[in-house]
Image 1 (cartoon, rainbow, N blue to C red):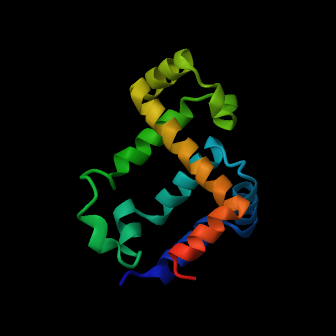
Image 2 (cartoon, one colour):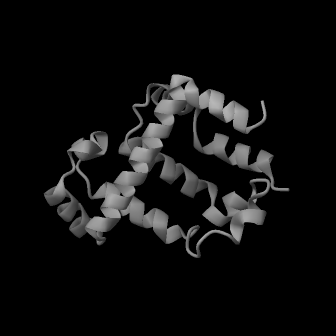
Length: 149
């Protein structure tokens, strides 16, 4: 069944009210950047291991076995953190400026490959598109229909 209340309590401990309001503003305006993403990863890590957090979500145990092995691996968070730390503050705020030579430099600095950088940037762009849809109202309507509201 999960333990949503414990999950909420842990999240409230890690994210202050001011920080939560700022994040909400960034989500609504779709101005969420890699600095914010890094901050969220660090907050999640403080809450416990990914597998512990996911176990608190109702219904997750039913789909856990369907995920590729290593999907909930802590090393993936470490890899994402190292990639973001290898970026300059300007690149974190404006990831669209990251071209081929910057990708190679970031990959060397983080001990990853340029393909890993591409994957992270693509996932980040997808997340930004989703946030823009949610902010526009169309996404909220789709989500409401999905949830049966």
